[in-house]
Image 1 (cartoon, rainbow, N blue to C red):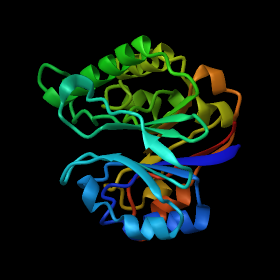
Image 2 (cartoon, rainbow, N blue to C red):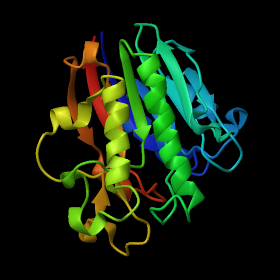
Image 3 (tube, helix red, strand yellow):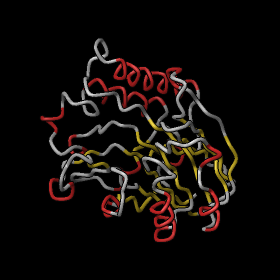
Image 4 (cartoon, one colour):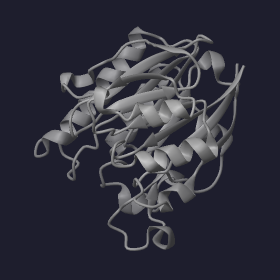
Length: 262
């Protein structure tokens, strides 16, 4: 079975329903994982999604903040939710597809503006979130699994527009990158996107603050797709749909795609 999966921080699924529908119509991933839905689950606009074949959803939501949802054309059942760092936030949901693949959808905390947990509680929460995610996958080694989402960390030098300038900027600090790699190694996760696109700068997020994000191109790769070790050789055709960042009333993130042959 071959299927295509996409992950996208949508920054309000109700506000940006038109571009979610546009992505579904034009690119038609079999599974679409959304983060920062900013909606209770019962308010997610499923009617339009179902009309395009996305009849299955597992989600964790809350009013106005956070929120993760997996929309699927493939039959799927809920496979759990984790509250890493006990924040009480809707930041993780898992779904199990009928082909036996478990998809984890994660929206990691951004971490605020100051990379110091002593003066910035949000940064401490982010570090604790990743530490607990590491411990969880150490204890629950994933099999036939995919982890996706806005992890809010750009790990590599080619995942940011300027490595040296961003070393003290939240999302690319050494302490975050180390924890990011700890989580990836704890589950034996394989970086699908970089497995397919091995060289060159690669971004999935461009700030709203830039007057011309495309020309300035000061991006970061914050959105990720990972595969468990037992299916690491099944993926191909990874891509970031950069042009989506320029659609009308866009998210500041672009969707990331990958295809799996299982």
